[in-house]
Image (cartoon, rainbow, N blue to C red; front, side, top):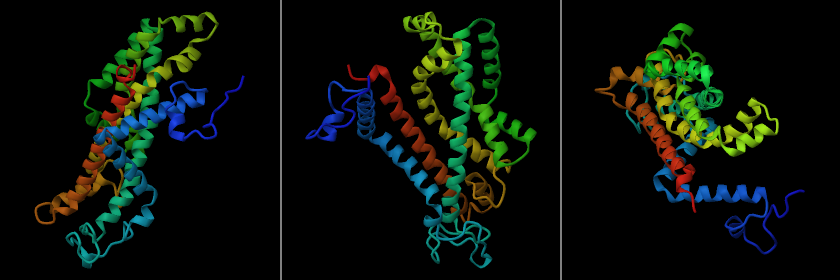
Length: 311
């Protein structure tokens, strides 16, 4: 049987359709749930501010050629270390006469690239390790969790430095190193979630129907772990950005002349006392984006927490 009434009926407003007490189809239920989540996000002003910051980062990265006023790597030694607002340079220039605003705009692409790749690799691997360990238990659980504990025993930045030192400097190796150090928390969360639901009646029913282990894990356990993973990913983005900036600051991330924010701070630290804007502007960008992810993560935690859902 196909779903009916997947769109608002004639004479029925979209908002009324989304606020209907009884959904008429699966699509209707999903749209109503998304709309309720959006309302909760909009009502939380700090979370909505974080959402706007992240949207601004995406827009900046997508339209960098339009927003940048100069070429990010164009040098003009006659205009080196100009203060903000001088000669058309909104945020001033650096030690090579490059426009800081333009470099920040193009640097947002690098930041978003790092965030996107880490967000699509580390959580998936951690989710797989955690659900397999929690569902199978026994020696599999012991081996996987002890491996997770080994990774958790080291500070993330220190472990990332060790991986980058072994792999070599570069943005690709930096992303790989960050991903290798970011997965353990997701594995612990997924394991805890799996332990609470692996003996549920619906899991037993699916198992009696002949479903295999992989089908149960991916088709029935993963969907129940997604909300916790999403919240953790959003809250971890600030730490990932800081780790990437730390690698760039040490010269192990994106290499010159790439406008990576951490590398820009490293280059500007020599001029901080007299030309403070060279290092302060990329530092402010890192602070703003990190704050945005933290605010959004707190809001998503409130929205996706089942204990706070409507009765």
